[in-house]
Image 1 (tube, rainbow, N blue to C red):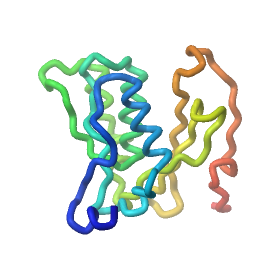
Image 2 (spheres, helix red, strand yellow):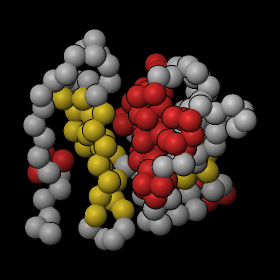
Image 3 (cartoon, rainbow, N blue to C red):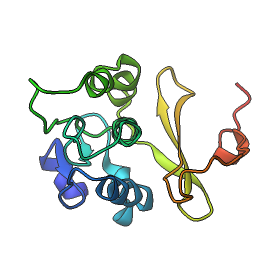
Image 4 (cartoon, rainbow, N blue to C red):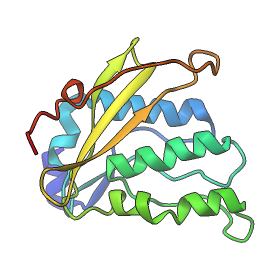
Length: 167
């Protein structure tokens, strides 16, 4: 990955994505596993690419679209869309234009998020990503629908996430 980063600004680290929840989760899990430590060479000018954003293509539910957009922001991945912009549903357009999510994706530190905690295997995942100002973090908690959609009470502390700085 270092050799690629020396000559490229962005590179794909996983196979092709398709417009389905299973495909999105396979990319999320791959980034979480981070084989070969590809995240270590990412930063300003060097970005891992999770492949295209599939929002608005009708293969994902709204919640699944939220998961993809949020996680691509956590990855600091490019946000290349694969959709006919003339027909994007309003809910999908709102996600694509969400300034809070875009600010995480475009954070000047350029450091990708990491999966820092898993409960019940990969059924509940917690991710953190350092952002400006220094000492701040974006946090993503994802709950893939492996429980059949039933709610579940979970307690996670900042310490559990490795965030122990007194500030």
